[in-house]
Length: 387
Image 1: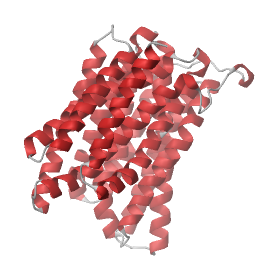
Image 2 (image 1 turned 135 degrees about the vertical axis):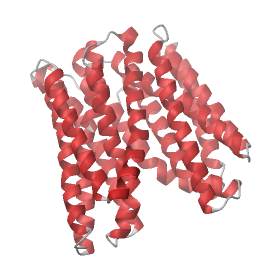
Image 3 (image 1 turned 180 degrees about the vertical axis):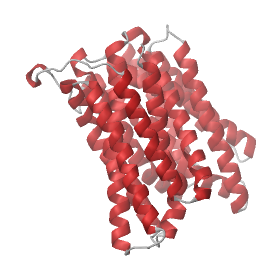
Image 4 (image 1 turned 90 degrees about the vertical axis):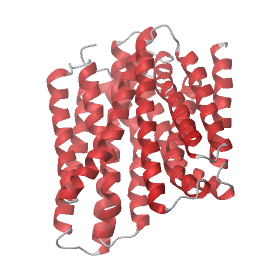
């Protein structure tokens, strides 16, 4: 598939742009004299709009083709970031009224969520168009590995560039999607359009997508749970001070990102393993990892637990994408990819709220919940594969 390199580069650049905001959002909110919940609102809105729009973009790509929707998504992310960079550049030297800052940050982050929603949905659908069912999981894993690289690269590069001014990483990550858009325009061929009446669209409750949606929601929920609760868990169970906690948390999250990438590279090399098998293996490994976390109170086993859990989730990500593609017709690929992407977005929204509420009950409860949920996913995957 000659378009695969372009898709991987596009996803690295656009995921990096999405994640880079997290490196500057704290100091940016303080510099504009805003409150912490304003940052949470902007991130949550981006997640909500991802959920709402992913299915829309997927269906739209079924009708008018993958290339124009992918171009709209990538250019939209870049232009939105450019607006954000220009506003921040001005606001840092002429701090506007709180209401203006809040509206601009929320609206622009919301816009980024709207346009970014097109990228994973259309990328997955394009792979499903080009690759036979036996090899889809491997290609989805390559796409997932590129996302993992972007997740690591974005915050790291954003934090490094922020030394030169909070607006500098924003300008940088406005340029990168423009480069991605140029690559899409030059290298992705046009796909045929279809008349509206020709295209069936799977419903949210479509039984063919149910397992893929459950896996997508649970995996993204667990990723966010790890990110949100890790710092608190280290602080409360290892009795470290704030600076040591930040250091340990950063090291573990970096290792987790590497494990996520390695797992998906491993999946991409295997051609004889079905999506159901990857779900069963990934769910079992993830459950084991979270089990290690909730029985340990020392640093090294804690890090091992998070790495094991993430390695298992690295098997699951490409599996549910391939499973969704394999279970629908050729004309439904965009809608199916968008529906599953929406389930991921829902996990991103529910994860921070649910995991922190569970954490208040007891620090181990979020991880017990994740371990049990992945064990149930293994059971569901066994049952569905034998239907």
